Length: 316
Image (cartoon, rainbow, N blue to C red; front, side):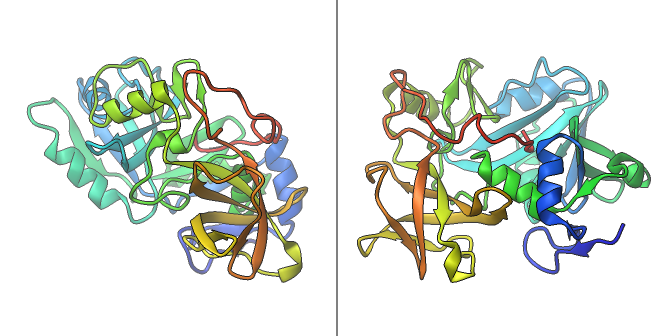
């Protein structure tokens, strides 16, 4: 299977596509393909107190994580802003985590500072283990088992990113900035705020901001799905400014060509921006589709639109 690899950017080194990126998107949506994410750094947390220790630090409830169950969690600052994000799975003896390229050193340094007397051991496991997105969800596997884990039907990161963006799932650190709080990115569902926040778990740093915004609603910004003008022939850069009537109102995150929706992107915009406002990113015009309701709170209404409409899998 011949692969065209990403030559630059956050996904450099892994397959971008295998010759049929639009067909690969359909295979991903049907749960029939796997994605090589072996460029993402992997870390291991061992020791009898690993889950209770992680649970005390993170926004997610981890102390009862079942073996084999994948999860996502954030480490927040005192103001509720996302400082670190990681996914992972516990095998009953070790928690195998993964994060964005270029983020592991800072994450491990933060975790090490907070270890205190906990009976845990931290290490960088990127040389020995790799992440694969399979039809059954994300898996961390030994590198010698990477090819077997990927299987015969594969999709590249072009397909994975297009499906993720269409589902309204942000990629932390690319679709966010250093001011982002979880409430700007996700709609609450029961006791969850997206894949990374458990609204009923015990105290953790930044919880006050998350809880207050959940109760009172109206976060400063909101995530939107952008439908881009395809006639221009280019996609906006991550971090590019979004404008409305000549005024800057937000930023663009990741973008891709989707097999049904065409050119799309995720963006963060002011909460007060009208939901029907026409947007521009440089020379690219865009319309917005609601992901996070501007009035979201305990009185929230679920927006009609993309959530639950576009199938696919993410690193939840």
